[in-house]
Image (tube, rainbow, N blue to C red; front, side, top):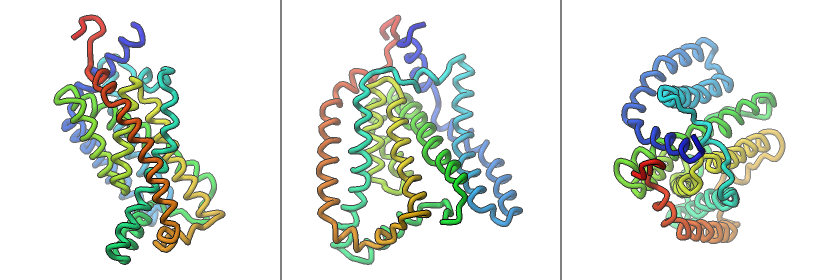
Amino acid sequence: MDQYDTIYKIRERFSEISLSKATIVTLFVMLPIALILFIAGAALDGGGLRMELLISITLYIVPLGLIVFAFQKKNLSLIPILRDNGKHRSDLLLALPLIVFSISVVWVTILLLNYINAGIAQSYLDYLNSVDFLATSEDTPYIDYLFIFIAIAILPPLVEEIVFRGAMIERLGRKYSYKTALIFSAVLFGILHADVIGAIAVGLILSLIYLKNDSLFIPIIIHAINNGLVVLYIFLNDNFLHYDTWETTASYIEYGWIGLIFFGISGTWLLIYLRKNWNLVFEKGSITDPITGT
């Protein structure tokens, strides 16, 4: 079986996975695990950072295990679609505009909200800062940052790309259309993140990259770079730099012109990529049997 045949079978298997059933099964498995972890955390006086990390890692390990199991039932492996197949490696450069765009969207949102009401802008920023659920501090052992890296920069990119770019796009794309699949998966991906608008843009671009490359490798790497920078920010903020000035809207407003420039340049770069690859994606979007051509 050549590489194309293997990728076809993997994509076909993705399209066979019922998203509703998969969600129910995942929740059914997660509920007793969550209960056990909750009890263990209470017994350990809240459990602290390491309990939070254990819960976070478990939340990703379980669905990953279920997906692997679903493929093994068909004697398939996910590995081929996770590999670098050497196609369009230049798409890795999109990591830069995606990261800059995500930051600049927050920046521009703060500027717009501040124009309406300063209190609303600060509340929005406070909300974004509160989303950091990991209770780290300058006393956090360095070894814990390794587990934070795994919990944020390794497992989420791997699992979320398999779910949102693999299973969801192939299932909805086969059932409805790839246009519907790309938009729906990107919007859902955005809703599940604090920076909704920025995450929707990221989800859409990563979906295009996946279909263009017939591989999840580049989307996973870009996602991992983005999340890895978050871990780096947490580490530096806890131990060295302390970015307290960015916890209020004052700095965002004072240097608002920088945010606008970042938004304009990165947004233009991403729009050019979208326009250039939109038709190509639909040509490659449909699953065609390499033998029968259907």
